[in-house]
Image (cartoon, rainbow, N blue to C red; front, side):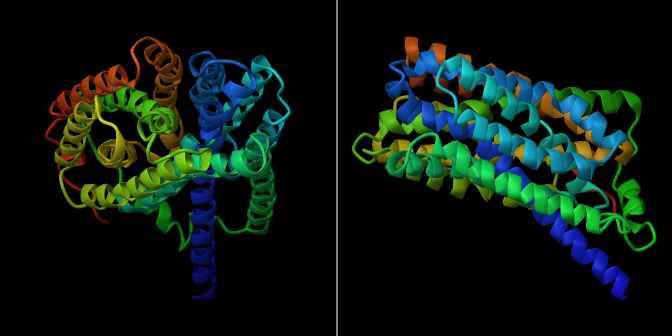
Amino acid sequence: MPGLEYAMDRDRLNFLFLNIGHFLDHLFILIFATVAALRLATEWNMTYAELIPYATPGFVAFGACAIPAGWLADKWSREGMMTIFFIGIGICSMLTALADTPLQIAGSLFGVGVFGAIYHPVGLAMVVHGREKTGVPLAINGIFGNMGVASAALLTGYLIDVMDWRAAFVLPGILSIAIGIVYGMFVHSGRHVRAADHASGAAAKKAAAGTMAIDRSTLMRVFAIIFFSTAIGGLIFQSTTFALPKVFDERLTDLATTATAVGSYAFIVFAAAAFAQLVVGYMVDRYSVRMVFAVVAGLQAVFFAVMIQLSGVAALLVSLGFMLVVFGQIPINDVLVGRITRSEWRSRVFALRYIVTFSVAATAVPMIAGIHSTWGFSMLFIVMAVAATLIFLAVLMLPNTAAVTGTAPAE
């Protein structure tokens, strides 16, 4: 059927746009981490610990604005919100390049956080909408997000060496605005066809079929564990992704002697670790979510404990290990949310999950600054090991329901 094939082609293209959006979202959020570590502290005559707290307003906005973004998407238009995301975050990134003081850069990063907050509640709701099995699509989408994390260090380090730190904000900003214009045209051209809803409402039926029926008390227990592990996981994710370029700058002194080299090693670790999401996504579609989650959290605790005093090649290898399981954890909670929430509420539930994630994550930046200036990164890895252990213990308390011990029901 030509009409069905056309709708499916648009569905695939829409998925590509969503994946690119996830890439850009994490790229923009972490440009400043590398700029601060490798150039701006020296240029502005500040210490790393003094400078990085100015990123905090952006991370607070990244979490706090998720709720209104999810509400607007459910009430107005998810596609419209995604268009605003691409253009808005690109403009704010370019404005960041104009900053001449820490307060100015904090204000511009706040804008990046406001528009960056749109992606997770809106984009992830669009990714899972109408899908029977969500683990692999969320994993693929997650890989793009983590490649954005990886590219932030590599691209920023390279642009610092060959141009300056301002270019690291300007060039991605131009790209995002251009993609936003193209996406807006794509959405406008398909007003008569909903990319995710084709074949006479089949997507809506799939969405309903993929939602588990769970009694209220069990549902509250699952949500409590989701939000607890989300909060602690957000702290771990933000701490590791934000601090890793500086960790490599200090602990890979024999291997990385330039900004490009530091960024390259960070890129290699982040890029390789990104594909752990695909493995985990495959596993949670076929095996017990509780079992997979427990293994991932337990390995995090082990790797962080081992990392405390390491340097050189050993530190590089163990960093790859803990980033594999940090990234691997990301799709697990999203799979659970997709299974136990109705489609019409999904953007808002994802928004609530990510406001918890990124609000707690916002505390990671001042925490890193305080720990680094007082004890160094060894203490940071002790804190991360304890946090991962808490997630492991929480996961063991997940109830024995189909949503956490099996896969989503087929139609």
